[in-house]
Figure (spheres, rainbow, N blue to C red):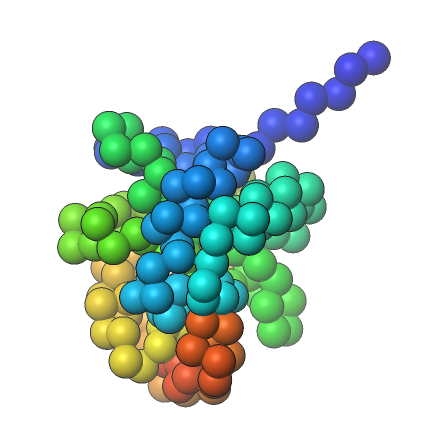
Amino acid sequence: MCAIEVTPVISTERLVLRGPVAGDAAAMARLAGDINVAGQTCAIPHPFNEDDAERAVARAMHLDWGREAKFVIEHRNFGLVGMLGFRTGALGRPELSGWIGRPFWNRGYATEAARGALTWVRRDWRKRLVVAGHFADNPASGQVLCKAGFLYTGDVEMKPSKARGEAVPTRMMVWLA
């Protein structure tokens, strides 16, 4: 008997969210290697090269999709434009994170991807609460989260940024299905 593991695929008007594959590493490295992208995330170091991207893809390909999810954000015409994921955070709550490559900023892709992913979270993952945060010096990410339905909690936490090498004030938000 042969077992095939299938990751979820989410389609929106312009995007497809799917599990990462080995062929994604070069585009991931090119986009996430930009300090302006990496510096707005907790987990991406700078520099971030193709070897780093290959290791990230390998980890993502072996996730327990019951606890975590990592999606490549793929534009139907432009290919990989970013990534989005959920991990189990504090108190066992799913926490949303993600990034969009700088050439694709200000086009609504992050909002569209977040909305599609949250529909999946509610319908397929059956979660009713997701937390997220954005660095206080990145209000654009806060706007994305607000448009996706998140609300500010009033909490500010210090979250580490590997690319910056320091903890950054992070405005926390919550989404309720």
